[in-house]
Amino acid sequence: MSEHPSEIRIGVVGGSGLYEMEALTDRETVTVETPFGPPSSSYMVGTLNGRRVAFLARHGQGHRLMPSELNFRANIYGFKSLGVEWLLSASAVGSLQERYRPLDLVIPDQLLDRTRSRVSTFFGGGIVAHVGFAHPFCPILSDIAGVAADGTEARVHRGGTYVCMEGPQFSTLAESNLYRSWGMDIIGMTNLQEAKLAREAEICYTTLALVTDYDCWHEDHDNVTVEMIIKILTKNAATAQQVVSAAVASLPVERGCECASALGSAIITRPELIPPDVKRDLAPIIGKYV
Image (tube, rainbow, N blue to C red; front, side):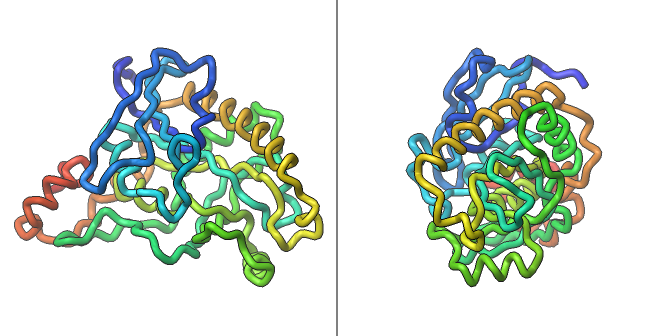
């Protein structure tokens, strides 16, 4: 598929360290205004393997924002406004099963929502839409990420359920054991809202879940030190950079997945009844339908 060199079709959301790679050239900082307020930070746009890529520091520069403080709508809307069709997420997670060890990389295929106080939709205020979300991660993008991950030193796991909890505190022992009894695999605090909003925006989304430690159910949990965590985070960041770089080299591809047309039959409200200001604000997302 041909691509104009100035087009931004690929996005990456994660730690600010993700774009601190030598291969990323022609960098520019892009500020995006949205109807939902400011994104977590400005977008760093650069050229990686011949593609223009937009990076966003999920928690802001210097990690200033808690998971519950993230403006998920603004973050995804910003990517959509820039033209992004493919969004790779990199996230630190805890392991709920013995087989997922620190430094492992998981590409989950399911999500479980345990958040309580977050907005997870662009709709409301006079427009209603119900998108399909049975398969929350794009299978095409997940496959590309999996192949890219195989080229690293990390142990790679395909599939599994990511529990998205509210935070910022970690789980109690009772909660951790409950998730294990349900057969859940990994746990984090950010991906559920990103995945839902990306689907509404018809953006293909997947995550690179980088295991930092075992959750509190594990007998070794209390032996984990800050130094150990920092060492693992540093190694995981290097792995994420490798995967992102390799995945970007394989993109873009033809979008034959349900993500690309998720809104096709999802908007229930009659077009003439949608408030003009809502229609204007959501134009990047709903414009081709209403």
